[in-house]
Image (tube, rainbow, N blue to C red; front, side, top):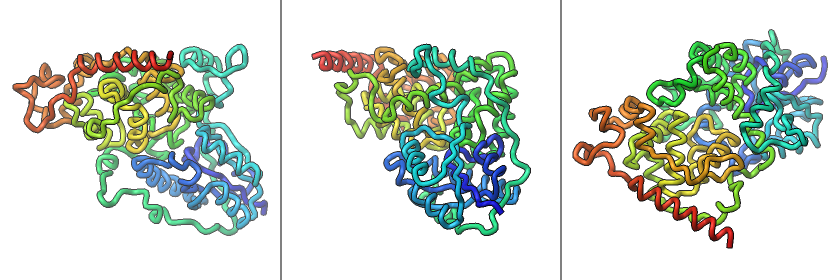
Length: 458
């Protein structure tokens, strides 16, 4: 029998359209391994919501592998060290994996490649990050020309089918027990809302994709309406690699209507990876120099009010409570809530990025960093800081009354006319007053921005 081949899994937890598994299965007995590695990413270890998702996704993947005559090996530790030890235990000569572009995974791939025969495949994005270049051969910094260039490579190759069987080694190496990793919250168990809303795993991803395919043609018309869920809700499945972007593209591309708007959002994932490829520390360092001099407020009280959905702005509070309960927030509301933190409260965008990192089931380094820097105005391609969203206006414009009733139940009895901005005489006693008035916040933000620019220029 040929020497076994290790498949190193990370955010690519699927069997179909999975090039690393397909190639390994052609070469010999396969040892699929997932490593619980908090050492390599260090302070970028997964947050609580992502760990909940991971537990269930790994359960699903192991069941799918067993149906193919295989199984999932679980190990804990630093990826490069664990893979080297596993190769020595099993006599494996090759490791196959999908490329990952977070800076810590790129470093880990270098370390593994020095010790083992590592074969890296593409499959997490529409096109390999770094492959879409300008006429001068450089990488794009602005989304619109990047997307225009990426479209020239589309459609992506058709997705590969799941292998009919996956050859097993003569002897399986030892595996950790998933329950011993303590990925699920217990004291307290705050994941009830996540369980009600999500089905992690490849099968759940396919169900979500098929459901959205029927609605994709209406994406542009519905995606900004929080009370009418018009987004795909595929983001956590894409993040954990339970479905490939090629599968998504080919499932919806011919839907007609406004599906091109949705395809542009899939392309945004590629754009975010293109950015962190150029700026590995994008999640912690602003791309625009004036923000180094910005005088952020360090108000722990205001930050806690935002985190808990107690700002007195119903649309913001609804979004933050939805996030805590379900591990997800509607995209339009994400922008409103993020803008509120940065520009109304003048709290450093990095505090918001880290909160989202811990509480989102789709917490993705590239997307999270790029989206927060876009909102703050500090990114290479960003909304100007002086463009300050008015939450009360946004709430009414996008008809968020039903959304607010669902997530801020103390306001449920208010009329559509009052619920976006409850008048003082109708504001329930158990709902807080506005943490700051919009006009006051706007003036304070613009003043802080002028000061930062002056300090930077001096």
